[in-house]
Image (cartoon, rainbow, N blue to C red):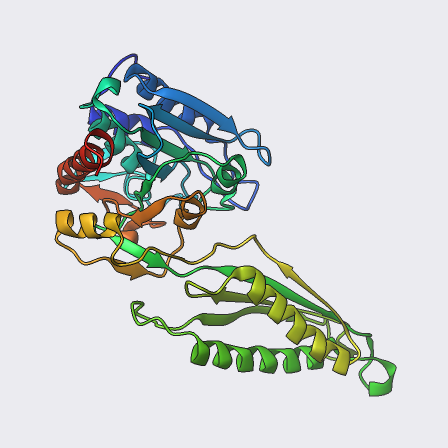
Length: 387
């Protein structure tokens, strides 16, 4: 659904919800986001934005979009991802790719998480012209947040966009979020020697070695939780979950191979590279003791934790405008990548995270106008009359 010029907010919502852009680690579900990117580009060009479309090197059928109005060394980024998770066919009460208006809610895949924010950002930008701005307004649309973070990673590789402040419009019920935990998922593979179970000397059990590895990992978890505390989080310590294990193939065979998958959610100040290095060291030590070969690999690149100081200008401003003290969340976002680009970053957007990744996802009618008003005010503060 492509509008020729200046669509209304509802038309924009209809257009982006009607344009599928699922991202998934499963190739059967994964889709391009190019149609959404070109739709946004059309609308933003009509408003006078300079638009750059950056196909991903890792996935050329997907792209980021950087749309800029105005020039200068500072400015504000309004950021959202264009992709959605897959949907549960048959569990929706309406077409997930049609904006359905009922019960004072708009239903559709991506309404809360988080295509709507991009339409709301464009709606807020309509009030401003290039000559109004002393610092640039940048609307950023990224690819593949839900599966790989490749879009945000490639922005860091390009070193753009450049701005002083960034608002990431993930669904937070318009409560400012200044910190979240990171996420890493690792696979630990041990290889031993299979053999007949009647004689232990015929093999070397990878499963028994993994039992020792699991004990060491749980001991490491206790150490991490004692060492690292952050009382701003509901769960004030890092978490580590043993989520999946598979080994062997039959009770009467010594287990020759065993694999364990873990999930670790670190606090700010716990770099993923250091955690991976320590995990590998601990696993290899146990493997050597049991005369097993070991391999520790990442199931995905991982996302760093992020934190913006409570006294940061953007946090103070958001708190004063929303009436809510900045909070922390457990879910991950693209915010750490914008911090790497040098931006003071906050997570703040309409809709509830409780609706994300759920059938019958929706956003309340009542959340739209306050979001546009907040974004207009932020553009005025950071682009028109920068402090």
